[in-house]
Image 1 (tube, helix red, strand yellow):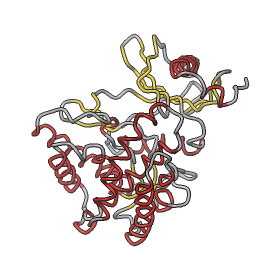
Image 2: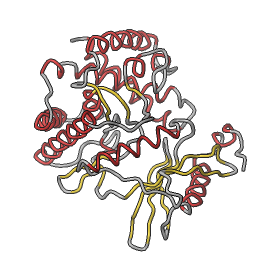
Image 3: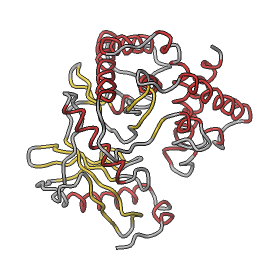
Length: 344
């Protein structure tokens, strides 16, 4: 079955794109040994993500992956790390093999560019800690407890990754100097975003050089660099009571541990509880893993680096509605983070 060119799909209204992706998801569900009652969209953004319901209620999450982000080997590697984390006692989504025993299937739809990689993960209970643009909800004492536990959980993941020997052919992308500040950063050439003013372009060009030089000096020794989640934003942390669970390993790869910490903090930097959450996160992390004060002093650098990645993300999606909506806020946040970093 041949798909229409990508431009045909990208030119459709979002509602029509969502309808076609829903059809593809429903077709894909038949590849798994489940009695599916219905499939409901959770989020259609980078990947199209759906809740899969059986007679007992929500049972799994089905992901229709965006085209070309991961190789088959990289997607298999994501499943392998999640399985290894669970084996070490860390509760994360677990891959559900298809009827053929595979971690994902390739599924086609005549009107969707593809074929698309589709996988299914076990359901994780909990509510999102937050979302981009929304203030943290909860009493200060609760926020302190939860962020302290998130710090412990993050440190446990870093400990597991440092001790784990990945299987042969394990492959994930790298949030390293090249991935953050090279000629072709993983998420795009952020300094070329068209919405930037001349002074902002100059700021981000200077910031790119500063990031590259500072990270090269910092180095990638195992006490600071390894396999990380790389997308621990509040949307990807589910909370049940005071207990957080991590989901969405789509961006996981090799990078600095401080990049994970910065990602968790980035979108709450302007909130009134930021200092409380930041200090609790760091204290929780240190309960499970060492974090030297000299390393922690580089947190502003990693906050700035994290901010530039989001500018690259919208730059490579300039025609998409969500990118247009987020661009002004992301520029404002990134300018502030970079100015703070350079002012040190």
